[in-house]
Image (cartoon, rainbow, N blue to C red; front, top):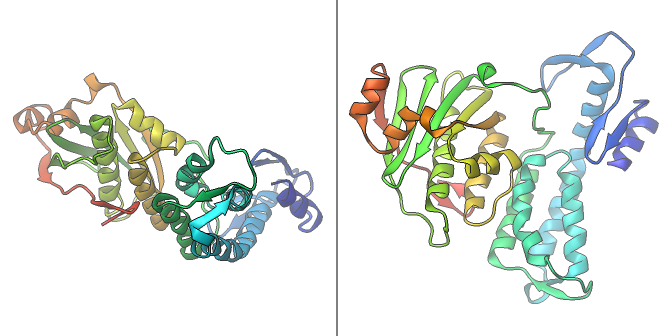
Length: 311
């Protein structure tokens, strides 16, 4: 990021640019605004110039894609030294400046090299790390340009669509008051064998199901607010960190956010206030009708998770 700031100041004349870690900031005394076309909004000229610079930087991502594929496919005996692991992960972290949503896919690699300290030690590329690295390469290759978690703060009332989710050991359920009239219920699918907390996995899967549904609306919403009474699920989507097998759910959500260019927020709601979603998950449809007689209840099929993506 220090190098990016140097380029911004000395090559693009964006004077006064500063950074703390991966957070750029500064000031612009010019009151005149300019339009940044990708976002179709007016903003200070320096800010638009910095975003334009970031748009140019993704062109170098093709070199990163080639390096990732070389790291995976041409590893002797499917092993790379710790130094090589650190080099490729450092390069990918640089790329996260323009594709920050890809961060969760690095978790398996960091787990793989944790507690390793000898630079020349050769570390095996297992199925999971190979899959996640190639997934990152594919995303850089297919989704060029800057995709940022929007810095503009927005609250639930500013959402284009709001969804309430819940899961039980009986099933999954979600509903939306805006747009009104939509409620969905599903039988409980089988959880992966590695799941230690079944209800957490089902709650996260319900959020993913709600996201799948929300992006099919017309016109497609830009800001999607989803409420869950499971704190682990809220934290996972807030931090964008997860381990297997929850990581597959998170990567599937990331795929939607990047491909559909939508902004997602997952907020917590106390269980006692999540009564309609709770009744849907338990298939207590009479109870649902008592709380919200206007809802039309439909069934849905939860996404099938395969290799980090949905089918």
